[in-house]
Length: 415
Image (cartoon, rainbow, N blue to C red; front, side, top):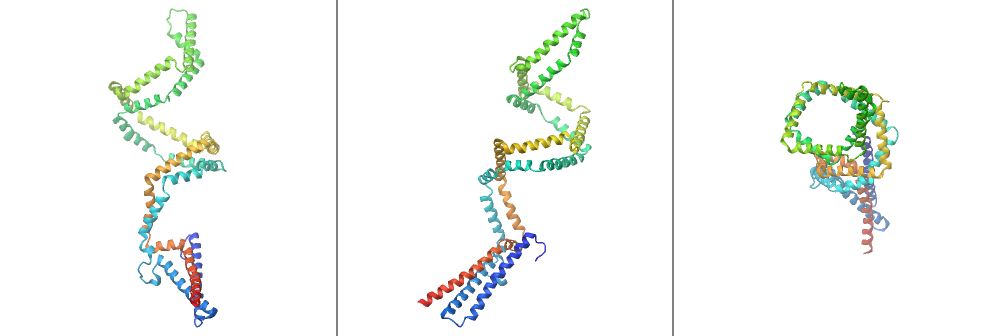
């Protein structure tokens, strides 16, 4: 057995050799029978002789046909033999075209993904066994290792030499204005406004004394202290009520005024030269602060160290929360048919896009791989996979040839 073969290829080679030996044995058997019966052309031995003669012809003809696919029979350069070694390039291109036309098609990909239930299988895999623990453990180790190898000097160089100069050169006001316009169009800012109002109301209620003291300190020195306290309490109550009213009323005048101001700001950042100039000056002042680069690096380093520490803590909040979220996602992929269908549709869209734009390039891997093979190597590889089945052609040729010889001899005898 040749060296370097995989276990599967070794088994295929053994099977190929057994079938070759069987086909050759039938040919030898037919030849022996023919020799033993060559002087008998009548009676039942005449049928045996005619059948064995035709069996030899069929066996030799099919041996030639099968052998001619992979090499020159008996080493003779007969035309139209050794087809695969001589035409491997065209065969590779034909195989590439076949795969591209019949497999790398959008309708085939969508049908296959839809029938496979990719999202549901992924969900079942996630909730089965300790797969989630392994994902989080391996992912945390890889991410922590990657973060630990990021040098502070590299981050500083990126910020100081690439990011800040680039931001200074670019005119950001139109981009910020367009982004703000999109946020306002989708009412995405309302949640942030609600959060700010709620936090302000909670702070006002929890810090009555601080607010009252601030108001009392602003009062004239000639007013009585008891009056200052009552005024401070009344002002605090009015402010709390006003903030609470803003939080409860979706179309409050303060909200509408804020929306109007934000819309004007978004429009000005995109179209008003004065607003755009003021924004760019503000950007320039902020980016020109001497400590901006150092502060940015310090913030990054603090975040990096915090992440590495959290990723290394197996019972920490971060890893526990990630595990819970992955398990919850797995259960939703199994139970929520709407989500599962949406995920499958997204996967199908991505795969279809890849097939439509890069399917041909993917298929060229076939022809490129075949072209790198030596002609003899190509023939050996293909014969290793299909040669065993092709030996049945030789066996069938021997059997069918023998039967045909018997029939022809019978017809000749009758005539």
